[in-house]
Amino acid sequence: MSAPPSDPQVPAPTGSARAPGHRLRGSLGAGSIVFMVVAAAAPLTVVAGTVPLGLSAGNGAAFPATFALCAVVLLLFAVGFCAMSRHVPEAGAFYSYIARGLGAAPGLGSAFLALVTYTAVQAAVYGYLGATLDAVVQHYGGPAVPWYLYAAAALVVAGVLGFRHIELSGKVLGVLLVAEVAIVLVFDAVVAVTGGLGPGRSTALLVPSEILSGSLGIAIMFAIASFIGFEATAVFRDEARDPERTVPRATYLALVLIGAFYTVSAWAVVSAWGDADAVARAGEDPGNMIVSTITAVLGPVGGDVAQVLLVTSLFAALLSFHNVLARYLFALGNAGTMPGAFGRSHPRHASPHAASLAQSGTALLLIVVFAVTGMDPVTQVFAWMAGTATLGVLTLMALTCLAVLVFFARSRADRRLWHTRLAPALGLAGLLTCLALTVANFPTLIGGSPALATAIGAVLVVAFAGGALWSRRVPHPVPVQVSTRHTVDTTEDR
Image (cartoon, rainbow, N blue to C red; front, top):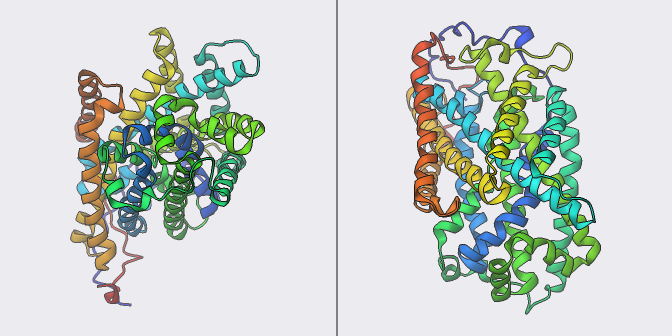
């Protein structure tokens, strides 16, 4: 292995170098980080909420194949993302990658866009969690309670866990994730063995004409939104045991597990009823389809367990996004682009405690606004905020792919053709296709209002532009040095 000539190192700018007291610490392995990001993806929530919508409004019984297609696109994205991770020592994820590849203005613009995006997805989960918990309590004979009170209670618990060391959150998420995945895997296994309640196991996901039927664009839009959260592996870089190995392993593992779980579980839902009946049931009652399906296959006890685990699935996603947002604020505080207090770690917990508290305050403010304006927690809070997050994350991933291509073309720090050119280019093409389909179908995703779709798009554009303009007021908004310790020249990959 030979290395090209080293590029001159540029000293880290003031505010970006991390003093000992301003660095997060931890010993998270790939498994712990995978728990974090898979929990953020909320597997049971996707099976319960997204699968019925994909069946009814997307490409029908072939919708499970759409998860596999999206997983392939995201794996192509991950190749360049992981190749560049060894040259990005900061834990700023999209922000750090885009800044190193495209410059300070796009980097800080993406940071502001990421803050808005992840705040939106967390707000969506608060609305869905409050409504779901209220429904479960009433189902078992309890009183009707406003959704926002449940959301506020969940905020307090997430805030306490976010204030403490990351390994505590990792343990909580591990337990919750195992529970929600287990009930679905049991359901999948029973359907695979018995053939379900209908005419037998579905084969629609293997038929090209079925995959291309209906509205493939809407199907891709719903499927790609279900992967939000996997890209946050790099945010936990400082708390990883061996970040240069742990982060790439966690990224690939999370994507493969999420993609396989979604594809198989969606296929099991279809197979449980049969192609035509599954699509009909999804259109008639999408909100209760998964619970009624699990009840029919596993019995009343299985249905009751699924209802409870749907609540814990939402809380796990909430906690994961809380941790991600806190670490984004921490990275920006360290870089001097946000108040310096955000970049301070707790002396005992080694957590971004100030950023965590600020993030909790922002979430509380949003819950109050939603409550005062009387917004419906599902059809408005969840739908609007989830749509915003989908558009924002796709934009960030496309920018990151572009940044990877530009970074390696300029630095020549890694000469592997597949890792630095081909895979990122294919990933960028796939992501731009998904982004175009999402924009075209965006009004559908948020309830059918073109005016609202335009307003949400404007918010995201303003966030990015605001960050780009703010970079001019910050002397050194991002580190600009290129790490040459890990320069790679593997000619056999060409």
